[in-house]
Length: 199
Ligand SMILES: CC(C)(COP(=O)(O)OP(=O)(O)OC[C@H]1O[C@@H](n2cnc3c(N)ncnc32)[C@H](O)[C@@H]1OP(=O)(O)O)[C@@H](O)C(=O)NCCC(=O)NCCS
Image (cartoon, rainbow, N blue to C red):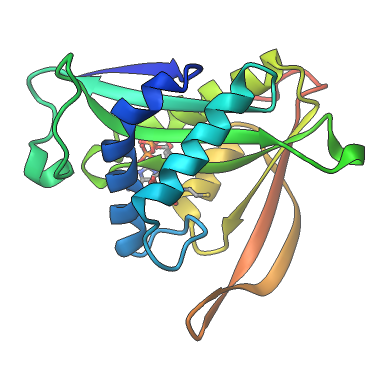
């Protein structure tokens, strides 16, 4: 399997991407992933989100990075999702994005809001590649501090972010509500004004 990362900058590409991107996010949320939704998002919500990100890409407001997988050993459609492959035979394996803060005093900074890899593709380095790519694109866009937050029990994601140099700067105890359950909200930041402290 080979994986290609692409930053989506043309809104015309959203339509092709949407069925698989929506399926990945909805399936992950349905299986309990900590992506900020308690119920799987519907397709219109994901379309609006992706469109807004891509519209903002040209002006440094946001970046949407997609991992496309291709090759013989790509997981079968049933184990990946129920959407057809893209015209070139590849499949969307994952996606992630950052968005610049809207608050005027926070404008130099951005938040890495979501990184998501389809379950069938997890553990193959795609999440790391996407996150590294997003950090690189934020740096290129002149972002000063890249923040993110994660649910306290999401050890896998937190470990990944720490290896990329993110530091914990705060924690809201029992803040994330999923039904009657409460989880910590862990706040991480990477200061891009300093040399990349990659470990
Ligand atoms: C978190 C997520 C994006 C990681 O993507 P991935 O493609 O599986 O991750 P990678 O294969 O690139 O692994 C990255 C790191 O994750 C951790 N990791 C991977 N597989 C793991 C496992 N089975 N157990 C524990 N940690 C694991 C390791 O720290 C790994 O680092 P390494 O490269 O040194 O081994 C993915 O699991 C996911 O989409 N989860 C659901 C959505 C989510 O929680 N997103 C983050 C929201 S903040």
